[in-house]
Length: 452
Image (tube, rainbow, N blue to C red; front, side):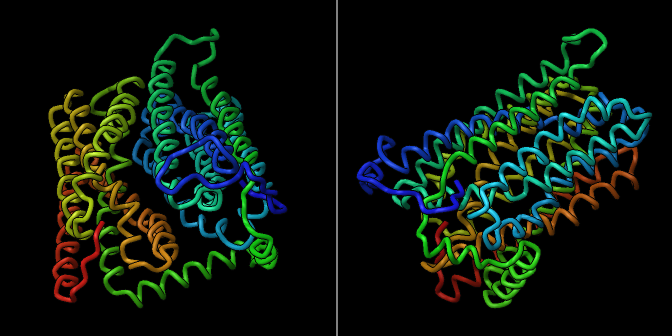
C-alpha cells in the first residue's frame, strides 16, 4: 500500500493485456489477492458497526433517557463530518509514504472499540453519549483510509484493469457487509452468550479486532510508484496546511467551472435531503416500529445492499452515454419514493412498509451511486479528474454540517411526528432535480454533451 522505497519489479510484474482481466501475475495480482481479502475483512467490520445508532438508543438506554434525537443525530452525523478531514490525510506524504498511518488507524481508529465494555460501566445517560463520542473518534482517525486506498488502486492497477478489479473487491466488500450485519442483528437479539453480559459488550471488542486486522492487511500491500514521486512526497506539506490548500483549490475550481458548481449545488440539495433523514431512521424503528436488532439490520443494511448490488449493473447499462445531468436528475426523482415510503411507514407503524422503503431505496441509490462516482469525472472533459473527484468528496462533510442538524431541529420542533423530515426531504430532492435539469439545458445550449 504505502512504501518507504520503490518496489522492485521483475518480469512477473508485467501488466495484463488491456483487453483482458488476468490476476495471475505481478504487482496487480498481489494487490488484487491481498486487497480482496482485506476488503472482505473491512466489509465485515462495517457490517458489525452498522448498528451503532440503534445500540446507543436501545442497549445503552438512550431512548429510555429521552435523548433519542440527540444520540441518533450524533451517531449518524459524526462519520460524515469526519470526511471534512479526509483532505488532511490526502496531502503530502501522509498516506502515500508514511505507511505507519495504517498502524495508527488500526490502534486509535479500530481497537478503541475494545473500550465499549468499560464505557458500559459509566452511569446513566453518560454511557450512550460516551459511546457516540467513541464512534466519532474512530471516524475521525479513519478518515484517511479511503484516500489511501484510492491511491493504492491508482498506483498498483493499470487503467485497463482498474475498474474490473475494483468492481470485484467492492462486490466482495458489500457481500460481507450484508452478511456480518445480518449476523450482528441476530447476535444482539439472542440470549446473552455469557450470563450477565449483554451481547453488544462482546460484539464491539470483536469488531475492534477484526477492524484492526483489516487495516493491517491493507498495510501489508506496498504501493508501486517511482522514486521521483517518492522524493516529492518527502517534501510534502503538513496535513493541516494541506487540507487548507485542498479546500482552496476546490473553491477555485468551483469558481472557474460554473457548470460543475451548479452540478455540485444540485448534489448538495440531494445530500441535505439524504442526511436529514438519517437520524430519523433509528428513531422511527425504535420509537414507532419497536423493531428488534434483526429487523433493523435486515431492513436498513441487508435489504438495501442486496437491492443495490442487483440493480447497479442495470443502471450502468441504461445510463451509459446519456447526458450526466439528466441521469442525475432522474436518480434524484426516483429517490423521492424512499422518504415517501418512510413517511407511510411512520404513519401506519407497519414494519413491512419499512422493508419496502429500503427496496425502493436500493433501486434509487443504484442511480445515485452511478452518478456519484462518475458524474464529477465527466466534467474533467479528458483532463485530470482528481480535482473534480476530490472537491466532490470534500463537500460531503460540508453538507453534513447542514443536513444532520436540520433533521435534529425538525425532530425537536415536531417531537410527535417524523413526517416534516420526510416531506422536507422530498422537497429537497425535487429542488435538486430541478437544478440538474436547468444545468442540462444550459450545457446543451453551450454545445456541451457530457456523458455519464
